Length: 359
Image (cartoon, rainbow, N blue to C red):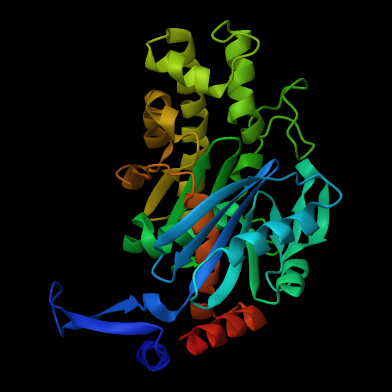
C-alpha cells in the first residue's frame, strides 16, 4: 500500500526519489523528498491583535513573512483578514499558490468548513475556513494553532524522528498537540490536547480561565498568571510584564526564579500524567515562553521525571528553539500535509490537484 502511494506521488511530481539509504539492515531504502518547485503555500497565525503570515515552498522553506495589526474581536474581522491575505498573496511568488493554512488559538470543528470557537474574542461557531476559501477562491485549511505547530514539527522538526510525540507550548496559554502513528489526533470535536484546561486549582477563589472555569492549568501558569503571581510576590512592578520577569530571573532575582520554578513544577506534574496515559516516544517543548524556559526547568525536571512510571523516566524531552514565524510555518504545513492524509476530504483533493497542475 505504501509503495503504491509513493509511486503515485512520484508520478504526480510531488515526491522525488533520491539515493539509497544503507544505514539500516536489510534491503536498501530509497530516500524521498518533496519537490520544492511544485508550488507555494501561505500560512497564517491568528492572534487577538495581529496576524503573522509566511509564504513557504513545499519543502518548508520560508520565502517571506509579515506581521500585520488586526483585531479578531472587530465586527469586520473576517473581511479585514481577507484583505490582508489578498495583499500578502499579491506580493508573492509567481509559482502556483496551493492553498492557505490558518492556525487559530481555539477549537476547530470540521476542517472542511473550518468552524472556529474562540471564546476570548467572541467567536462561536464561526465558519472561518469556508468564508476565506469562498472569498479567495483557493483551498483554505483551518486548525488549532498547536496542531499546526505539531504538523510542522512532524514535517520539518524534531518530530521527523518519532511516530508518537506530544508538542507542548508555553506562553500566553498552555497548549498541546498529540501525534499518534504520525497523525494529529483531533478528537470528536477538534479539542483533543487541551491540556491548558486541565483543572489544577480547586480553591473557590482560584483564578478564572478564559473558558469560564476556575483553576485551569492555563489560568495558573499562563503568562498573565505568572505576571500576576510575580506582582503579588513583589518580583514585578505594577506596569511590568513577562519580559521584565524573564530579565529579572536572568539577573538572578530569586523571587522571579521561584515564580518560574513553581510553574515548571506544576507543568511537570500535569505533563507526567498525560505521558503516562498517551505513551509517546518524546515530548517537544516550544512556544513564545521559551526564552525563560531555563528558569522553569528547576521545577519541571524533578516533578516531571518523578511523576512518570519508572520505565518511562528516560523519555526524550526536546527543546525547540523559538522563532516567531514558526507558528505561521505550522499553518503552512496544514496545506502541505493535507494531500498525504486520508481524512481531509474535498480540501485534500483540491490542494493535490493544484500541486499536480503547478508548473
